[in-house]
Every structure is written in structure tokens, then in C-alpha cells.
Amino acid sequence: MIHEELNEREKLILKSIIQQFILTAVPVGSRFISKKYDIGFSPATIRNVMADLEESGYINHPHTSAGRIPTDKGYRYYVDALMSKENLNPNEKKLIDEKLKPIQKDPETLIKVASSILSQITHQIACVSYPALDDAVLNKIQLIEISSTRLLVVISVTSGLVRTVTLEMNSEVDHSVLESVESKLNEKLCGLTFKQIKNTFSERFKDVDNEEKPIIRLFLESTNKVFADSIKDDKIVLTGAKNILHQPEFEDPEKFESVIELIENKDIVIHILEQHMEDTKDSVVVKIGKENMHEKFYEYSLITKDYNLGEVKGILGIIGPKRMEYSKIISIVGYISETLSNFLCGQNR
Image 1 (cartoon, rainbow, N blue to C red):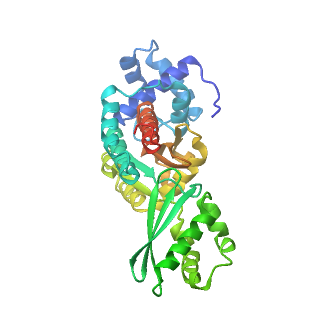
Image 2: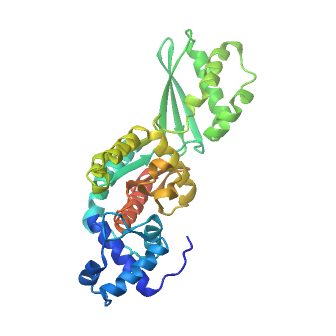
Image 3: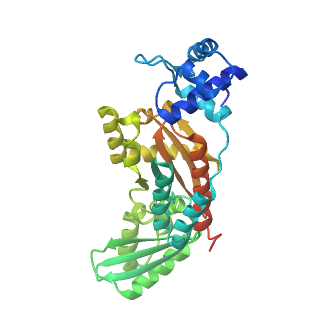
């Protein structure tokens, strides 16, 4: 993002305000900066610079305090131009690796544990979406009779992911017919993406034997269920809500309720993450306050990054108050994304 350029004095004072506010959640005054940060300017000079920064929209002046707090614009400038890069310490890396490595062959559990670790280390709400499967390439379909009228469909994609779906049949079907349908499904669909299958299924199965039609019709009616766009129906794992409720920003009852509403309405989170997915391009994305384009997120910052499972992608990140340790959290999100991708793609197996 392009900003108007601040001079060195303005940068130093803005950085001091934001760092102190991140630590304490208390509006920051000129005298405090002069004493604590020893930046070589008198309180009067700092006050003048703070007035300029406020006029430019980088900080704000709460009515009940003589101090200043950062605005969305101030946080954005800090993230883009002022903060120092922070690397994870060896203990944090060890914790992440030790928690994820034993379950690396189980994608569902891996995603859930990744979310738990992310919230544990950052003390924020963690969100991890299941991989979007529209671009997943079908490798194999198996049809297994559970009972005379229930059919288990086992779908394998080229990344190694396996999902299962149960379908209810109206009548019994001969085993040989199931084998024949299974063979045709594999012949006509393997190598296609889920999106291609959903868009062309009826066209590909115009001509089938009469005894195969009931099963093919069942698949046609259940295409969106069988070739769903996510591993799970809820699409996302959210953990660590209690972390954010302990933050001073959310002591207000209205803001407290907004957190609860956010957690309960996962569709909003999924929608925001999908927007972030378009922006990630293999890098960590930071969206602050109103940059999130949804009023439910105006009080939050989101830090996200995509992860890979073969040809498909998911996204992980944290939701927290705008007053957060951006540098540290950016490093954590980046490292967990990279580690999750490596395990899911088998690079550490």
C-alpha cells in the first residue's frame, strides 16, 4: 500500500505510540513518550508532532483522555513501514513441529490441531479453513454397499486426500451393476476437477444401460454433495474465542456480544477468508479494521496465509483486536502455514 511519506521524527513518534498502545491498551501521552522512549525530543515537540499525526489521520484523540491511540491508517503504516521483523524462537518452532508431525497423515486432525496451536501461541482467535476442493483432481471412486439401500462413496483426489459420502438408494441394486457403474464413473471422471465434474456430469452420462440408470440418477441428484467444495460441511475450524474475550477492548458488553456473534456465525468468517484467499498469493496478508470490508470485522485485524494440499488450497490465520503484536503474529502464521503445507504435501513423511 502506498502512503504519504512521514519524516523521521514523525515515524519515530508514531512507532513509539503504537508500540506502547499495543503493550498497554492505554492512550499514550507526549510526556510518557518523552520519559520512556528517550527519543531526544521535548514533550512540547512531541505534542506538536502528535498534533500533525492526528491531523493526517494516523492517530486519534479519545474524548476521555489526553493521550492518543492509533487509527486503522496508523496501524497500516506501522505494519507496512515501521515494524521490525520478528522470528519465531526455537521453542515455539519445536512446539509446532512436535504437535503436528505425529498426525501428519490425517489431514482433518492436522487442520484442527493447527488451529489449536495457532490460538495457543498467539492468544487470539485462530481460523483454519478446510481446503477448497473445486480444483481438486479426482483420482479414484469406490462404491461400497453398506446395506441393501445405502451406498458409501469413497472419493480419492490426486493430493492424497480421501473423503467419504453416504447415499440412500430407493431400491436394492445388484452388486454387478454397482461394479459396472463404478468402472464407468472412473473411466469418465478420473483426471477431472470437482468443478468440471459438477458442470458436465449429466452430459457425460447421457447413455448408460437401463439397470445402471438408478445409480447414475442418484449421482446426478447428489453431485454437489459427492463432489462438494470442501472436506467438511462447516468449512472452517475456529478456536481460542476465550483469548479475545480477555482483551481490554472487549470489556464493553456490546463488543463482547459482537465476539460471540462472530464465532457463532461462521459464514461471515468464511466469506472474509475467501476474500483474503484472493489476495494471499503465497504471502501473509494483514487486513486492519475497515479494510476487511464487513462491518462485523471493523474492530478486528486479520492476519492470514494460504496453505497447500497438492493442487488445492486452504487458508489459516488469526482474528484479533487491532492492538496486536503484528510482527510476531505474522511470523507465526507464516511458519504454521509453511509447516502445514509441508506435512500435507508429504515433504516431511
